[in-house]
View 1 (spheres, rainbow, N blue to C red):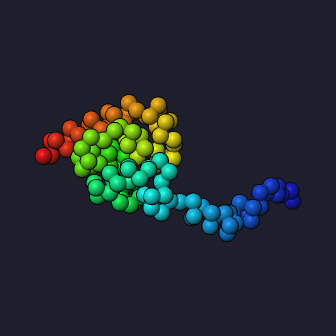
View 2 (tube, rainbow, N blue to C red):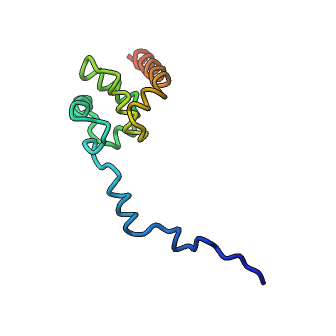
View 3 (cartoon, rainbow, N blue to C red):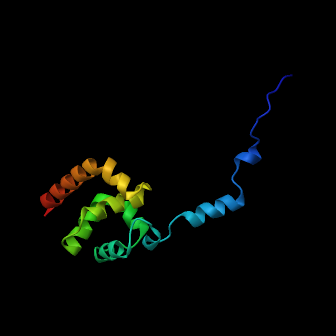
Length: 118
């Protein structure tokens, strides 16, 4: 009987305990752990009531930006790029370059929906 041996035995496909520990440690635990959000951005989010990564993920970049804008007044679009960066893992520069139009359209739509509810 000819059997083909697996070139990648099961044990080599299972992450080691060290790798699993690294992945758990690498996962941000707090908004303060997010590289794309500096102290001022974190303060703006806190004033808007967004204080955890779970809240940010649940809301999404556009609604979180809209809340920050409402709570803080004049907020730069750089915060929107930074929020999307924090959620996607892309650099804020890439977000601004590649997703600018779609994020601005989503923000416009979000603001229309909020006004309709008011």
